[in-house]
Amino acid sequence: MRAYLASAIGVACTAALVLPSVSVASSAPLATAVSAPAPAGEALPGSTQSLPLTPLAPRSERSASPAATPQGLAERDVQPFSLVGVVWDDASAELDGTVQVRTRAAGRGTWSAWQHVETHNSEHAADPGTAERDSGKVRGSTAPLWVGASDGVEVRVQSASGGPSENPAQHESPAQHENAAPSERAVRAPLPAGLRLELVDPGAPPPAGSSDAADAGRSSLATELPALTRAETEADAGLVAARPYIGPRPRIITRKGWGADERMRERKLGYTETVKAAFVHHSATGNNYSCGQASSVLRSIYRYHVKSSGWRDFGYNFAVDKCGNIYEGRAGGVAKPVLGAHTLGFNTNSTGIAVIGTYTSSNPPAAAVNAIARITAWKLGLHGANPRARTTLKSGGGNLYKKGANVRLHVISGHRDGFATECPGGRLYNKLGTARSSSARLQGR
View (cartoon, rainbow, N blue to C red):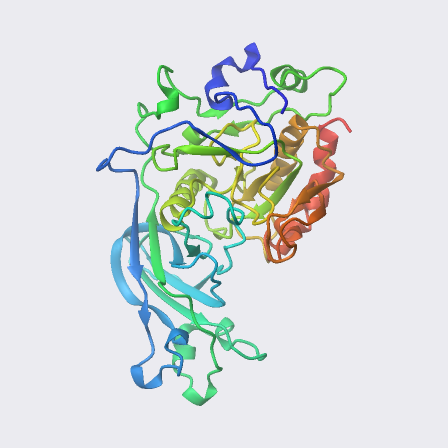
């Protein structure tokens, strides 16, 4: 693995860029202890309300298979929250069906329309057979949905049709489906066991003076890494003129900048040998956020990934908001090959970039596509990867490629290239060609 030297230009940001050196002998994930969890009894910012879902249909109308009966919660008052998701016991089980929620805006008393929550989130996870996946803490989970400050909620979970016919619940409101005659309802597949509604309040950022064990003796961590010129980037990375194919480092808002409390995540960090590819995702959290709220959205996703889904940290290596701001994701050092939990089967030797929002039927902003090009030109350039090229990754196991298969992929791929999924949404996926070309130009290719 190439060494990364901090130049005088980046001294102010060295604490956020460089972690203790790691010796890498192979592509197998490595781990190193860098921080301690919060002391017992010490409160973390934000909160999570975890509410068990219950059968919705009257007992006389429930399916012959109790596990297929719709579940949810009736309209109710709750403590303030801003993000919602559903989790279940078995991380390997799929929720084949629909999740619909509506929420009441805090302080206004108005209820939203019914919104769909993306149910297939298991493809955003650690690879099978890894310590993170096999920790015993990981749960099945939907994508999280950002709803803004709310104090009331109603939810309904309906399994998909067990036959080849179309699932009517995908096109009707919960009330319409509840009123359908029993003879009109399709046979339903079982829902996963242990369904719970997770309501996440991001809370305020941790106090300015708080720090983890790795920061002992340092005055502070930077809230952002400033953009560097091409020459400054090459000097900062210790590159020589013979290998100039690296884009200028873009401005990156650090974990401290968006308010990640380092006491929440697991104390160990994983690394792999290099970064051969970047997988682009959308967060599927919806587009109803302002760029000023992006830090709160990230803190909510962070808490949902760790506290609700049982992951060791934020799943993606980087995040991008609709205004083109770039954020450090999973801890470990933005220049280092940090092992993420973003593309099931292909987390090793790759980096994951999530655009905050849902881009199945909405076009991604040009600023976000440009940000993908800028972060990949720099990150892939550090590891000698050409954004226009293809590379080979070994599958860790998934629904498209069996474990151990050598797979030829674009250096900048969409999530769906490695896993059968809608992610990163059709509209964003169609922009990846533009991102590849722009990224390569920024590298000087």
